Length: 324
Length: 157
Ligand SMILES: [Zn+2]
Ligand SMILES: [Zn+2]
Image (tube, rainbow over all chains, first blue to last red; front, side, top):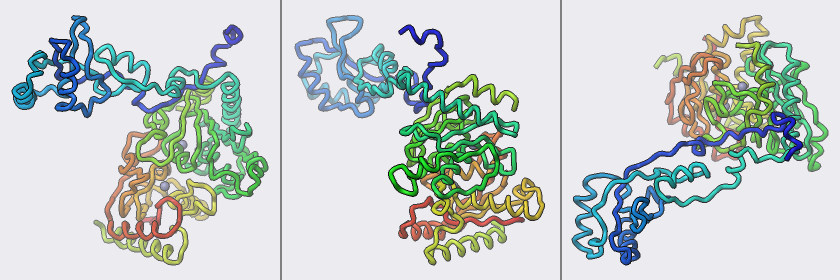
């Protein structure tokens, strides 16, 4: 559509930070296959081989494929490894006891995809080597394609990040990082803060302060802050919602916007706080949500949130340019 | 292991067990009252050291560098990051934290290459581990929903 061509960067979608498994490149493994010499015997051969030599690790592979070089031939997987003793032990026994094996060639090595494809791209690469089964996750596809949000949502995301940028700029300290916690259902800002770690308290990273501002709004809070760079704003909105005095449990249902990628402490604080989504601007080499770690997809952790990066990245990056 | 560490660890357990018996939340942990899930005992302890330093007109950075943290359970990933941020050099703990541990159980935040966070954190683990595990079991028998940061004690050496 034409109306967006004038401002392509403005409407750029945030980039999802997904588990590494969605970005991994093709890994191949050597296995044994046979050529079926008499195609009329195919179903008998397949039945017999599937019974005696089931696939475990490589169950994502189709058992049989048409030989790419000789179109009238079929290849069948007989072992999901490539070890000499397969031929001397298992295979020779099978051939002795089943006449049907005279219709297949001696097993030989081919390279096949070692892991099931999770994305369309991984699938396209994998099937160059061997046909695979693939169940496309449409949500992952949209996240990878950057077609996850509609134009209205992108506008809203940018608006919230602009709020984080402006609170970052208001800091009296050299380190310019801003954080805003939003309730996306009502599109209201619950808390916002700049980074105070260079003041009196080294743990007062922008994210830690914003989390505590939410607690303050809910009638708790651990830090009494007089700093003008931190504000809990929506006490009424937050607490009157659903008619109870406490508001939601911690940050459940809330989104965080932060100009720089959170550190490991802040990223884990967000796990403890049950945040729903995190949007950040510029990456940090030691960051815990895509750069050094991907804590939000770390196995063994009891709460997972979604992470998007690159929101107004150039603006956010500029905030950091005066620090080293 | 240093006898002094053992003595402090025993005191840490005594306090934790007392708190548990009297039905209190794990000593030091203030998650419920603050409605802030980051209010683990380690964070509370750090706040207290900051306050202590301010009241006694001491440089908090220098105070932290002379501290040892005694804790019954391995600090979580967040707290391990916080301890590095304030530059506490040493933590001594009883048993591993299999759910959130930041000193190797889930992630080795204590020793990871994170220069902008702070210097690495030395850990001595498995100190009176059986007592720590028993304490955790007793804790989970109760109905407190908080994270297992049972007890902390900061000693100024
Ligand atoms: Zn942080
Ligand atoms: Zn903790």
